[in-house]
Image (cartoon, rainbow over all chains, first blue to last red; front, side, top):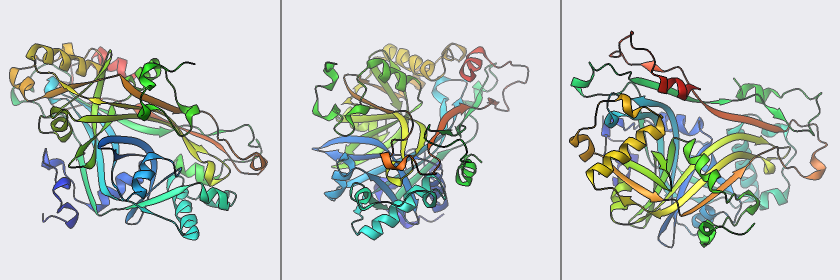
Length: 218
Length: 218
């Protein structure tokens, strides 16, 4: 398989376990779209920082947002590069030796400088997209954003140009001579589930659960 | 409440939303012990990197392990500082305005240089601890680690000296005038669940599910 352009950079080549690298853009999209949390790393005075935050993909960019005072947004404003990881842990892989224990996962890492969205109407539209990426169709049920809301939120986009996807699936890989040992080996699957929505005490009991929440719950 | 020593550093003071900071060491332990994945960030040629990896707490240190070729372990060997985030997302917080949407979470961030564990017997013991931190009591059911297994794995410890814990719980906080709006607001809880263990095809059907896996499943 020829290398897609996003892998032309040294840092997106998976040096270790290259069989786990997945160069498909659809795989990147799937990981980003099915996860809520991204871990954003940046550099402050030469030291690494990493913080969790919500994210939203829109086409070829990843949106990140927060208070203008948030550390990663201050780094982004200075034009500094970010590195963003989005990870789904799918299972614990239990082998017959400690050495071959592993995890099943889907992992995306994105590198790039972020662009601040400054134009108020563009910003409003990006924030709408953000809400609907977390809970599809929720935005239209909310009260309109005020100018203050928009001023108090910063939103930036990171291009999906330089990225790397790594996945592991399937049973453990043991040493050939270990397979005959009477040791239970296999996979314990892990999934994230949505619980029953808990309305706050201001929500009228007469208000039905909105359709967009029924969809999230599957 | 007086500030515990781990908060003496500027970088562990939560500047934004200081009411979300939790200075209790028991909270740090709880987050680390109930999570499988850590996101480790480090700096390469001035650029940020972040990768997901399994972790294990043992007393006052966090163990990280992997192939000696792994990027974060190479950075650690050079004495470079790491920043490690462990995050549990507990719920989506749905408010009446887009602005007040949020998430319930427990987040730990640890800063520090890692110490490589070099002595083979110390390394063996740390790796045993690692396996049992992921699946309690699993280690004793496995075949012994060989010298090659131990040589091919690197394990480092990061002291739990400089850290920060931030949490959010509870319903949305809306603008006072928004509470009366006929909009469903509240929390959609999120939890990670263990599925039924899937033995690999080398595991004899006569082999019962070990007690240590029954415990993981609750």
